Structures are given as C-alpha cells and as structure tokens.
Image (cartoon, rainbow, N blue to C red; front, side, top):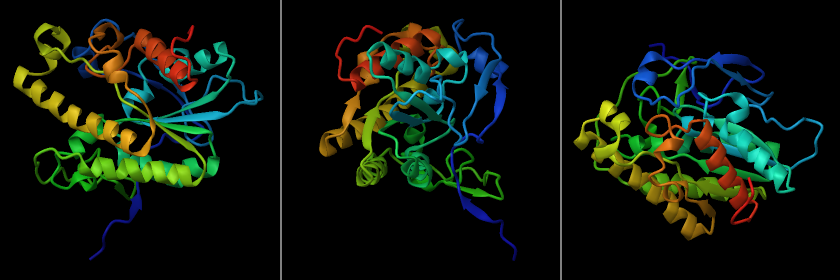
Amino acid sequence: MSLPERKIRFKEHQPGRSWEAIATEHQRTYSDATLATGPFGVTTDSNGFIESGLPKDVPAPTLMVLGDSVVENLFVAPEERMCRAMERCFQRLGQPTRVLNGGVSGASTLHSLHVITGKVIPMRPKQVLIMNGVIDSDCLTDIDSYWSKHEWRDPLSYDYKPADEGQRGTVESSPQDRKRLLRMAVMALREFDIEPLFATFHRRSSWATDEVLQRAFREHQFAKRMAWWDVSLNAMRSVAGQMNVRLFDVTRQFEGRTELLYDEIHMNARGAEEIGGWLAGRIAEQEKPKC
C-alpha cells in the first residue's frame, strides 16, 4: 500500500513573493462597509514574513508577531496593517523596531509552535508576540484536539495538500492542550533568550445589537462561539499568569468597539492603527503612548 508523504506543516507564506489579496463575495456578505474595496498588496521577505515597512539598512531589534488571519490582516492596505502601525508607533516613541508579520490564516498555537522551533529561533529576534486563539477555540472542541485531520487544522501536510478528511467529532471544550502548547512555546523561546509575549484578539460580542453578527449567526450559534472563544482566551491568560509572560489583553481593552472590525474578528484600517498603536505602546512600557 502506497501512502502519501507526510511533512510537518508550516503555516507560513511562501518566501519572496508578491501578490494581491481579494476579498470574496462571501466575505463581503458577512462584513460591514469598513472592509475596503481592494485589491490588497502582499509582499513577503526571504523568510516568508509579510514584510516590515522599516528600511532594511536601519539597524533595529526585531519583534515577530505570530498568529492567524487576525495578525495577517490581509484586507487592508499594506501600510495600514497592524504590524506596520506598530512599527510607526515604535518609531514615534524613539524605539525603532522591525515588526515582522507572521500571521497566516488558519494557524493554531500548534502551528505557531512549529514556526517557533523551525524558523523563528535561528533568526534570534528580540521578542515574539503570540496573538492567536480563534482557531484554537475549534481545536479545543475537536475530538482529536490539535491533531485533527480537518483541512485547516491538521498539523501535517500530505504531498503539500491538506488531508481534507474533516474531523471525527466534537467534545466539550477543554483548555488543557492549549495551555500545554503555550507553555512549550514560552519555554522554547526563553531557552534561546527570546522574550515571549502574549496578546488576545478583538471580537464583536453583542449579537442582539450587531447586524453583522446577525447576518452570520443565529443567536444560539454565536453564544456557543463566544463560550469557546472565552475558553481559548482564558487559557492564554492563565498561562501568562503562571509563567510571568507579559499579556496584552486586547479583548478586554477594546470590548464593545465594533467600529474597529469589519467582521466578527478582523480589524479594519482604523482597528489596525488603534490596536497596533496600543500594543506597541504597551510593549515599549508606555501606558499612554502618543501614537
């Protein structure tokens, strides 16, 4: 019996590429008017990160931001993405920092751990900000947890194609596997003198008053989604407290600010600027940065 070749799956963009991202009609149906028209340019560096806006000849420490499509922030103009906003804020604070965007749609904490051990550590950045949790909420209810054969969540690739076998079933949401993987990521980074940082994600949260949510979900469906998100978010908060990791709680800081999102979780240009500025200021240890 001949089996397809399996490889550890890197959730990354192909290095050294440029292309245009275009929002689909489906995405626009479940978004508000702040989802810009596009197309949206994307350029990756030689390591597959969405490129920094800082000139390459400017010496600066490097911050890598890892996560899913929230960090990726594709559907805004390149100069308006969150990681670019962070760079601008660091500059204004007199702490120029190269911020590399390692967000990839569908990435879970397990995918981020693969990227940390296989790619990030040899690059020796100063800091790594792990900002995920959306995909994790699905992993935590999958009977196979992070090792699902679901097309998006499978940690392996098969001849460079996803397994596409779907998932075997669901279970009651449990935070334990996410906590374990986050602890592993923290320990790996610290072993190589890289500071780990955590950030939660912004979300729409009030179905009763939100037309975008009402178009996308029935009330009971969204209530369940919120509950799963909370399990995922609280797992990160718990590990941050246990391991003394600096946590930037975007969820709580921006609660109710629906004008910063074009759909349930993705930042529009205003959200990327405001949340990115807030994150950079807090990382720079300035409570009220002028960003």
